[in-house]
Length: 385
Image (cartoon, one colour):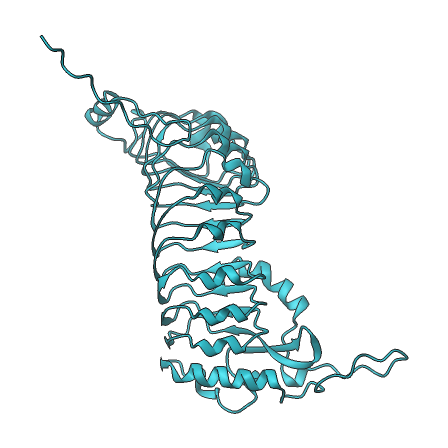
């Protein structure tokens, strides 16, 4: 499971304690005001488990390789004994069992997801990372209205961004990184209540939409896709919730907005391998919780503000492969520092002097009111004599 999963599992376990049949609690003793008559007294046979049996039978038929033989015991009607399947009392009827979670992480299983998974209507957790599942995500998953956490990372899923994810009202954790999804990311995703959003290392192609700053996510990882455009100048609108922002290798062409400094809850900011220009805003020195700042492999210049290097929580500071001319002494005291391939002549492993001189003689890059790189006006036409 991922690190962030550990933040959510306690909440799931409190609300849906996973139980095997031997761990089921005794029925409560009669009270003056009896509870409504239970449908089936924690019986392993009920309509929800019957539907689940159909779902798993259908799934097993489209699994083409199971090298660890994980699904060998996926037989018989009591699905709660299946490997990777976790049952709990139904949220709307505590006297019947239902399938609450599926965890098949790291088993190298090859296959597809059948539309029959829609029969698992009480599912809250679906973990399939590090397998060889492929194909598109079935739209029938929209029936899983209790899904809280989905991890499909490190598989071979393809197609466009699954719009079904936008119809899951309880979804908080979505991880589809390291797959073959392509196309646009619908802007509506940034208006949902998803708290952790991992789409890195796919083949998406999109620009950050204006409503990007509407996101209330604490973690946004969009790295290594065909992203483009500018950093929004009003990033500060995300200050109440955003903890980690990773836009590595995203083809972003802009200045770093001054407003970034208002993200005072941010712990990780990674903007490396982009086309950032201009200087580093001093406002970053207000980000008291920042632990990791990576601005490497851009075209930034000027000097690193001393106040940035003095951030109390900063542990890793990387601004290699830029054109910085100066860094103050406090930067050298950061625990992990990489300042190589710049133009700081008294530091080791810097760019050749000729390369730095050539850069300094170029017209300086500047950004427009929206923070995007402004195009230089064309030279005036030659005079007519």
